[in-house]
Image (cartoon, rainbow over all chains, first blue to last red; front, top):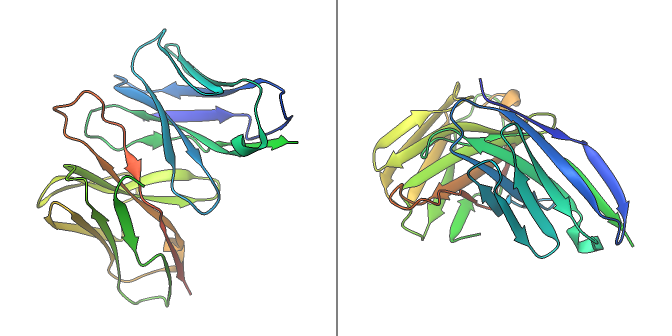
Length: 110
Length: 115
């Protein structure tokens, strides 16, 4: 059974204070690992897809990395507008649904 | 929301009544998915479709059925709603496997309350 565990469950940072969110996974035959951002009352918003260990992707203040067992979402010098819940998900087959973690609720204080 | 709409956006119903949620896309994507999101569980797959009239079950399919008669529409039906089906329901779409990038894009969600 595919499993995704995200930590921490919640994180409160000061504006400008960099940190990392963790996503540990177990899946047989990983097709892709996905990061999403979700704001209250809205659907998940796609951020990144990672396909192989060693891969990195960046977007503004966010950088996602992937190893064979986990992925990190690094947030550099965050701003209050980065406050959201960040979701990690894995996919086994190309058409399969995603298996999600429970998310990390991130709060950036001014 | 990548050309995805869900209707209704909010619904309150009573136990035992049938409920149908609609997902409509304007992207002509082949794959469509229904998820539910509950506190403490995260998002879980209910059913998905890989083409018109082609559907399959997900992790939490009991009590739900789906239909897809057109590429753009994917319907989720609760035949007899129960309080345990109170949740937020999200539809997602994905491109054909002909492209390597198969990320899923989500709709705005439907909040369903079963009393």
